[in-house]
Image 1 (spheres, one colour):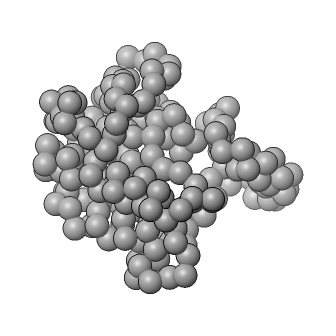
Image 2 (image 1 turned 90 degrees about the vertical axis):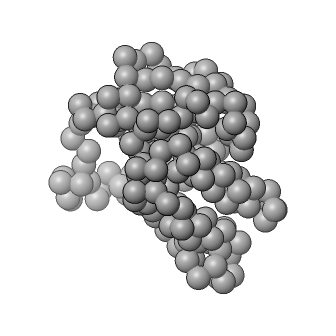
Image 3 (image 1 turned 30 degrees about the vertical axis):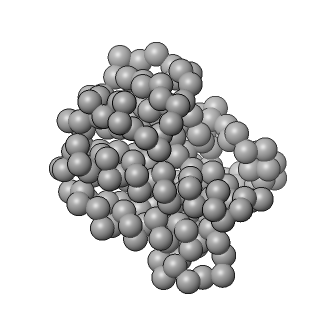
Length: 191
């Protein structure tokens, strides 16, 4: 399998990149990033591209891929709806449409969030926009679209969040999670 990864430097994307590099079924991972910063690896290819909303300049390097892991995103905290919409909906759908045109047999994997509102009518701005994004992705002619709605993601293997308040929340959650893992060792990551 050959995979494209957007959001490789974020917390979720770092985890996806790690797993892709460890998986023997993955031949190549192409990470589209704004700054060269990823570790060297035989399977890893990196495209430094500042404006992900316009992929025209790199389209020739985005074909012949089997999957896209779209992990790029931001917290909606303190954001105006228009700004959040540009990152969450406009950017995601633009990338997806380009990839579907270039790779009609591609599977698109989108990391959304628990509480996403597929009706697009909820009270919370972020849940409506995530729902709108998911609904749009399901209309794009990919081989398959998978939508993941995690409620909590535990960073492992030295991966850290760039969002300061997430870091504080993870620090607060560490002791109770440790108790749960001790009570249910099968929940522990064994890598």
